[in-house]
Image 1 (cartoon, rainbow, N blue to C red):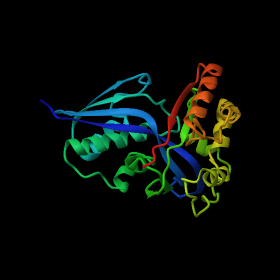
Image 2: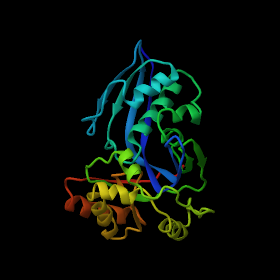
Image 3: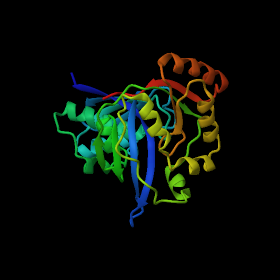
Image 4: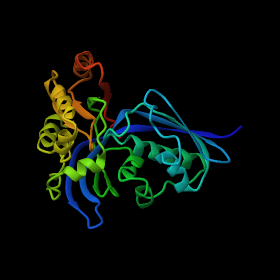
Length: 280
């Protein structure tokens, strides 16, 4: 019987995302506080003579199952072949690292299956800017073009709602529309994330530099952020990544779940889900 390995591909959430410059080769320099949520996709890999990909799940529609998918590229990067099943629960092109997290989870699963070490950040970066941070899947500061990942201590489990108004915003379009590309980095030192008041104040003074150009491209993103901000007990609402997914943070699971019911009722055609950050 062929051996199998599995891995979880959690949603990536940029609590803050600062664009601090642009290299001569066009790549943008970032400074971002990245966390991961307990909702995501699932990867299963099985030994096989050649690589194949099957995409299942509620968000499978439109996801390529050929060599253009990052999970197939992840197998090629490692030089192995496997039958890969991707169970898709996260919306695609949504600013929450779905494809990158899938690729990172595939790397983790394949390295278990074939008893190999994980690739370093430089190799992982060849699959995409978010892959190195997704490979670790914990609280981290991501900088450079994505290759510099600094793990952070004292991560916490914050109740959260993710909203995607079911529009796609191509990342190149958002970066191209960004008027100022030399912005200040995040303020340091970071707060003690265990102190909810200090963490909230710090986060409120940070930003996502891609939020404004993404809203200009798809104004419904602004409506999603305002819906979260207007929900009872929401302490912070912001867009993640280059959009279109937005997040709201809540003080308790009860408060989050109360807000969730209202938001789902008011926006039945949006993707609205409850989650929480992973503390590790």
